[in-house]
Image (tube, rainbow, N blue to C red):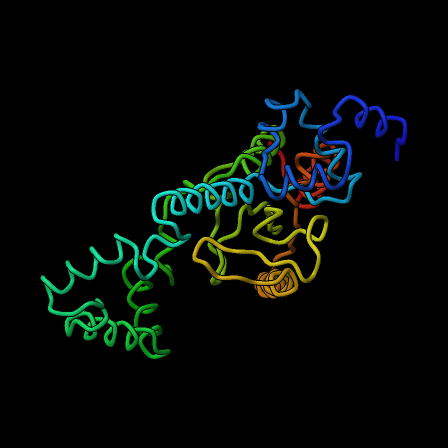
Length: 278
């Protein structure tokens, strides 16, 4: 801990020199690192240093984007409709929707339409274990895979994931067959020889480096899990992948950004242990 550097930053940036001030700007007003740099002229590294010294968990990029977008949506709804939910009872949009439903279908709620009820019933029936076995057999017969997602194009490469790929390509010949590989019911980030490399995003996998066991992670579909629940899910995934005969190495997002040299050493060891060459 460099107390001298800490005190120097507090002196240079008085708007951020206390826990209360920084927490309000970062967690309440949801300033991002670029916003802090633009507003106060503080570098990204200095912002991260202050956050850690004051015991405030830095957000990952994906978490920051999600929270800021949600805040903007909420502010827009409050400004235009006086509520955080545009379809809250009594808003003009709520009334307009109900009027349209009554005019078109004779009901206020879409779930009261017979055709919708029938479709939901059929959908529920398609999610039985028996239906799932039939679906998997069809995919295996037609495409030689168990799940539809195993057919997807490799378009979800994140920046930290790409950084791993770029470095590995300096060590070995890496093809699309090594990237986003279907194994069992999962799709793993990288498969190098007999080693699975998983790049865990700090937010979506609830990095213990940043999150407490009781913290809540909100997923894009609205599902909420505590960090403990996410960790259990991570552990179960690793157990199932190992049961397929692979070793599993986890590399966290913050490791890539904070000390990529250590990550490089891990990757070199994986290549060496699998006796691979370029």
